[in-house]
Image 1 (tube, rainbow, N blue to C red):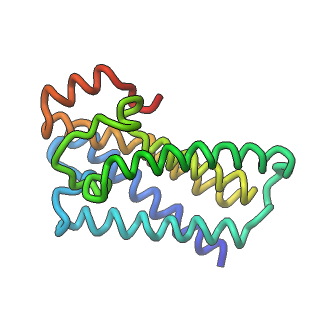
Image 2: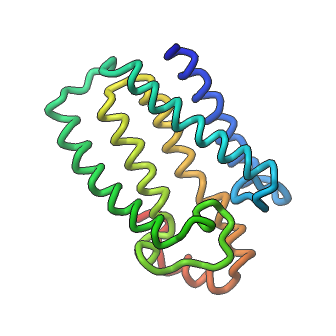
Length: 182
């Protein structure tokens, strides 16, 4: 079962990465952010993301402790990073709101954690993925987790042209003041 989950999660993440790269490279194609709630991009992005999260979670349970990290190293680091990522993530999601989080926002958010980083949600997501990688100590989770981190690193590059088109000078000024991640 864990091999099926690993293959499925990896293939879904590779599809997502491919869609992100096409979005970045092809001017008239946009996978993320989705054009509307009724678009194939919206449904496929959220269905794939949800499946990957579920597969990632169960991989960690089924392949627990198959890697070589020692408990005395991984647990304190994971706890500290979890506290940081939870704080950043909660603050970011509550500042942004549901529709904007879904990729359907109509206004530029520059308050809260967005004063310090343009992508606090992705930053928190990457930290959470790394925390789970440490906690499960699973080489399978490390494979899918690294792909998940890559997705979060690519995501801003899919959004920035859209944000520039949506918000123009306001976004360009914001972009010049605030770093992408840190």
